[in-house]
Length: 468
Image (cartoon, rainbow, N blue to C red; front, side):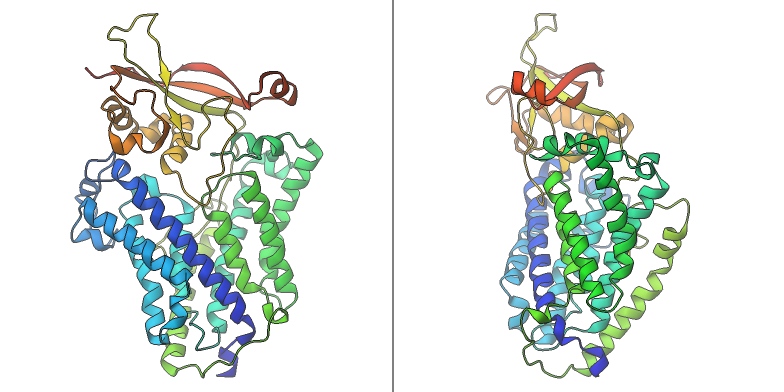
């Protein structure tokens, strides 16, 4: 069984597992704090209505047997508690036979959430977390050396994440091929961060270097993670550096951090510390790992076919368990930023003199004088979907009218998702949504006004909604 074990990667395994558990913790807390207004029994897209349309085989999970908001909260907070215990090292304190189901439990709990999350959970990093979490169960614990096959499966996942993203860019928007996409991306990305204004104003030649470096990091380095050491480790380190650049320049939930963690097992950390003594790998564990490897190989057919296709899809799961998915991001880059701004008034009659007050969101741009905040790896789901709503009203049709209706009632769960409610005591009489064109201010405008954004009205986003 010498070929099966890779003891030199024991530290990389520990870093990966503890880091993954921390991402799980963030994901579960995010779900627990936001679900009532989004998908709760009385939310914008209620889980019970969704389950009435979707059978178990299409969306397996605990909630297929029973759903209540109390049960969802218990699943989310229970998953958070379990994740915290794994961060603290619980997986290394129990026998190997208990470690495998211990890691599969948060995967099963989060799968149950994702499979009822509907559009609010339709992000590639949800599937990425589930796939990485499933593979983590077969890395073992401190009682045995890391299995080489599982380490290779993690590299295969890293390859699909990065190479898929690189291909979708090269095949997609022309600006990726002429290296001009970064002229726009920092300004038009879904949720800018506190440094995005500064990234946007970097010299254009440097933006072209950014784009070229992105192609190298996503189309060249992923191939090298399968090379012998130290080449694989150096390639993984290059991926980590580019992901840290993305962390600094925007807010992409846990996508970048999870990609960084996936690169860690490709780094030979033996030079940092000698491997501790490990016990012999049990035959049953080796058989399970081989079986999982074979399963991943079979399930890889569709993702590989997708990678080779000129009609490549982004972020798709080919099975209801979100295993061996296809990934990709920003195949096209928007040139102009639009934002939906929601306003309310307590005026009973709508006249030209009615005073409209703006609702403030936590992450998405609104107040032109407010510096964008850093929220990642925490995921602000409503803010993200508001970006999509500005691009396509049809995308928001299933939930946006319900959002306005809930604001008219000052619904506590919905208001809790916002940074600022201009009607804290009495609900507004009317609410409306308007579409604005946003752009970053120039350095000269910033010095003169103190504002980070400049905006101008495009027009109404929809009809005004009235309450009382």
